[in-house]
Image 1 (spheres, rainbow, N blue to C red):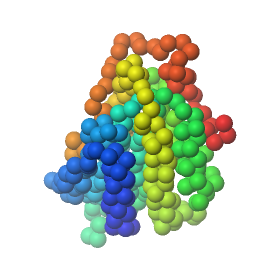
Image 2: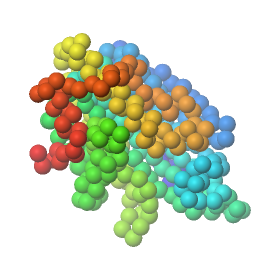
Image 3: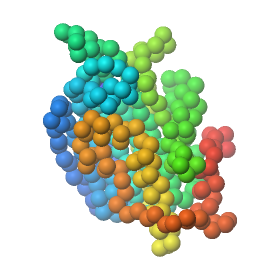
Length: 305
């Protein structure tokens, strides 16, 4: 399964980066092949200063070795070996009318290091995709969520509401009492059960991965050439600050990467290039900016609305 999924994310990285370069029309992804001293490595691709994308990364990695003590405590396990692979992407568009997007699809295995054969003691999938707009276009939110729901419904009608709720809960800045964005899907610890084999989970996760471009690209194409003001650009940078706060304070993926001696440049690739922190900033009453803040205070059912 690990070889099969790693092959899948290699192909998906190629598909996504090719499409993004075509839309940007100027910037190209720079590729960086790296190795992890303890085992494994990855292929980082970063795009910067384009017509559409100010900064973005579409990264894959496959790492393995001894699970560090800090992560043993996190997973409540003893001395085990691990393998983890995944694709992680973040795109920060230049135009504030185009939302930032994040996605990740991953697979994890743990092995009994005391066993001569390295017996598999755990395996699961995780991932999701979520949207962070700076100006709220409800039709874009509905499109993104409907695409997520379509991918989920192929496998189980309960998946979309379940994983949408988890996304709303996970991508939440508790110290700000607001969502990072308008959500999407978030799932983790997807293990073999009576109703879902690992092959079933593979099919589900890859269907979600394959839906990403369909979910995001039509929004980019619709919004990338809209006019915007200096003030709207400033608002985008203030909101990007909240994005940074989430990634550095709450995000489990960032934490895992830092605690397993991951590659710092790849882990922090998600951070936007231009950000502001303005003291005690509040948008003007009745403005489009305030409209966004109100929506972020409480998760919304975009399918029913």
